[in-house]
Amino acid sequence: MTTSVSVAESDSAATGPEPLLELSGVRSAYGAIEVLHGVDLVLHPGSVVALLGPNGGGKTTALKVCSGLQPVTAGEFRLAGRVVNGADASQLARLGVCSIPEGRGVFPNLTVRENLWVATGTGHSLDELESAAYQRFPRLGERRSQLAGSMSGGEQQMLALSRALGTAPTVLLLDELSMGLAPRVVTEMYDIVGQLAAEGLSILVAEQFARAVLPIATSAALMLQGRVVRSGDPQEIDRELSTSYLGG
Ligand SMILES: Nc1ncnc2c1ncn2[C@@H]1O[C@H](COP(=O)(O)OP(=O)(O)OP(=O)(O)O)[C@@H](O)[C@H]1O
Image (tube, rainbow, N blue to C red; front, side, top):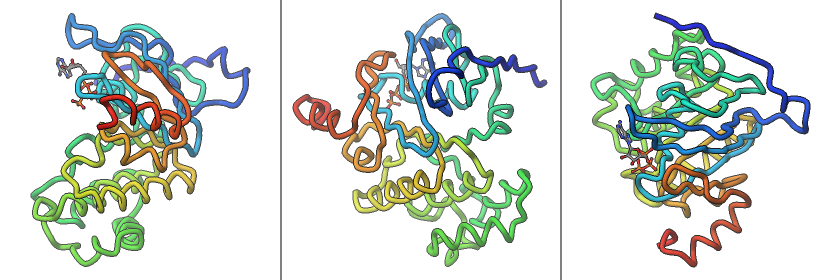
């Protein structure tokens, strides 16, 4: 069953450049246990925001809020200036939010082509999706009939990205892109993320390994124990992290 979304114009729409996605004082809980205690985050069009921090800081939960998989119990979640508290994942997907979860979310028992076919529901033909995917990632073209589960971690991540891009999102949410990938592949994947932002996509990426994402980030936010404790320039945050245990 689809619930109706209360979509209201925000007062902040009148002040300064419009963020595409914004969390203001967002709280969220699993059952009775609150794990986000008033999170503030801003994602501007065409930017990459790196959400950093150690295990359990709340990065994945914050991304789940942004993709409609986790409820907002207090505060405001805004998309293009409109309050979307209460919107579910399919409603947010229709508003242009696309998420690649930790572990990539490809169907291991389907081939590359079949995984791309899943995105045809959004209006593009399989031919169009394949052609865009293989142009960006020629390696996927060579493996179009291979089962996704038998591909390398990097190839699966390329497939997950291609399928996500097939839905023509405006906001891309990435959770731990680097997980299980060799350092060289991580660099390759984040170069692509940087290119996507340069093409206009707005990207929020949760990443435990700050060094992987900071070179292409527009800004960074550090999450500890359910709060953003620091946000700003990625180079500054990189310097601060390198002098703390988090940089290790
Ligand atoms: N489904 C769940 N049920 C109950 N508690 C949860 C659930 N998922 C996460 N938590 C708790 O919420 C807190 C934040 O977890 P979250 O996964 O958002 O952090 P994270 O920064 O993404 O960490 P990691 O990098 O380990 O995934 C943790 O204390 C975690 O134990």
